[in-house]
Amino acid sequence: MSATNPIREWTRQSYRTLPAEQQPDWPDRERLEEVLAELRTLPPLVFAGEIRALHSQLADAARGKAFLLQGGDCAEEFRDCNANSIKARIKVIMQMAVVLAYAGEKPVIKVGRIAGQFAKPRSSKTETINGLEMPSYRGDAVNSPLPDPKERVPDPGRLLRMYHASTATLNIIRAFMKGGYSSLQRVHSWNNDFVLNSPQSKRYEDVARAIDKTLKFMEVIGLDPELPQIHQTNLFTSHEALLLDYEAALTRQDSTQSGWYDCSAHFLWIGDRTRQLNGAHVEFLRGVLNPIGVKVGPGHKIDEMLRLIEILNPENQWGRLTLITRFGAENVEKYLPGLIRAVQAAGLRVLWSCDPMHGNTYTTPQKYKTRSFDDILTEVHRFFEVHWAEGTVPGGVHFELTGDDVTECTGGGHQINEADLAHNYLTACDPRLNANQSLEMAFQIAEMLHNRSDSAPTIPATHAD
Image (cartoon, rainbow, N blue to C red):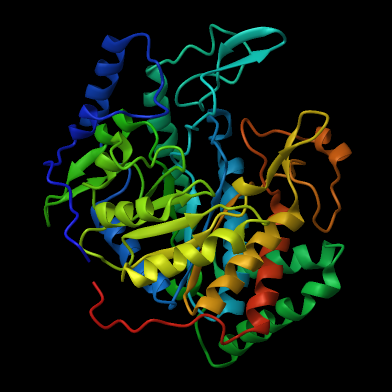
């Protein structure tokens, strides 16, 4: 790999010398600096040791020895920071993970879009509602979704609310993950309930029965269901590193191994709109030791992507960088093979993940943004098929989903149509798969993996970091 590491010295504040896309127009800069000063004194949300553990697991996924399941809300809302809402989101991710682990015959790394996904990029700085122009809603971390110009003014105090909401969410996650709520038997019983009540129950029975037999065999040979490997699990957190001032304020130097970690989440990603080579987001994230994701849409240029990979992963480590492709079902075969071949030819080590949501969004005549279940599934299938054809590892999937019974995406076993969207359309930004659709997605991906049990190649750990 060529020596392309930037010469610029990195500090927590070096991003401020470069153009930063998608940042709020904070009207009260003095209040912003007060908030950031307070955030710098508050405890980290996650710890360096946890971040290193995730990095190691993602290295396994990049080599085909594990699989990444990343999912959660498009944009978290403060009103949903309660036990029932958080539990519902955790529950669906756990259910999907069990199905995918069985079918893929490898560990599933569970990463939530949770405990920090409170900000969203927008295509326009303003929007018009009921004939009135106002600042665009940029997530609860910045302003209110209420269609009132006063409520849309960016408020730095919301950054503190985001921190405290994330803290509360993490407390609940850790309690559930270690307290038996996510035990293997419990999660599988939830999946059995789903299969029993699914319109396509016959289709999913084989996988459910096979998992049943596996659990019964474990009991027969005397494996204690209270073993930590069965009774407990881990859920890592992630969000788009959009609000750079917030991210920098929560960046800490590790006291045991030095190095800087963004302690707002375990995993952070750069969006398709903010991955400019000479931009502030790339500058900031190149200096922290968290695993980093990069969203890649149809507008990418291969030469720029290769350069970006080298900037963000100068030591070419396994598990450091995840490319999250978001091409749309009709564009996967147009863009993905060329990108894979270029990355392979350059000898760059990345984890490949598929975001099948963003490239398949459309607006109905009734002005609802939505996505088709079939389009989402098609993009996932084509992602896997292209990687299998290229001899590379399809290492993960990335969904916007919720544990609630919303009607935001069309299709699925319950056949939600465009006329049904109005029944329970709750998202503040983009449409999400509901709980049933998410589990259907997992079972159908499981079918694909099961039918090709020798599917994904594994890459030897030789010279692995």
